[in-house]
Length: 275
Image (cartoon, rainbow, N blue to C red; front, side):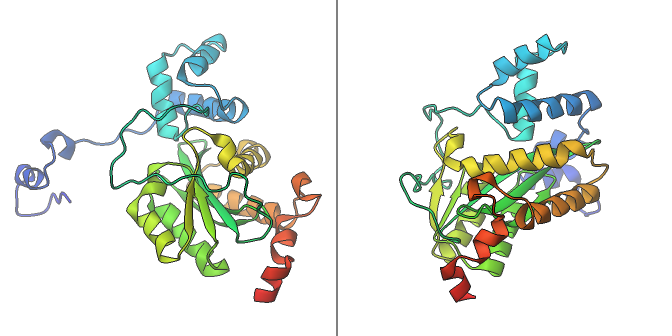
């Protein structure tokens, strides 16, 4: 990339890389305190009202006393990686390098660990700034198998979390994700294909297709993230690590008849025999 200390002038370097000259001198600006405060509000409301789009959220913010336009709300939602969740037609063209795969879980009985895994990424607010959390979840047991905290929505952290989960627990039969660019990237798809894992993707805007990950995010945020205003990325990682250890080993789940994810994941007969 651009190297200010290189013998080639910056203008020549930009031309060779097909970059505009203005982008070479651009310095990224930190997110303002007012926008961070709005993003925290939007994060909570998105969990409670996942169907709300930029228009509705704008109106809700105005009723709460915030002067803001729809475009500003849409910009913040894009930065957070969220959108209104409802079934809608796909009217946008897809890049041929980013294939979208069909949803494979409809009507499928999922009752064994490592039968189906799910992955997703969510926005995590901090006192100053924000990060993104990616998790690998075993569908049957609800156990979090691996996770990563990152400062961007790039595919790198998703690939790292996936590779760690496979290394520690073996490959699942099916991986289910949404249609986010990090999950349609060649790097992520390549890992799945190399392991012979069937690929399943949610319908566009269909949060119910990956409902257990959505429930995980709600638990993490209301039981950990919103209770602690993280001062740094290090503090955020430590807090999330502490909570996920509790979530896997000690937190009983009503949907699991009061059992913990660890109990269900490790005590299933096929998995115990494999171990």
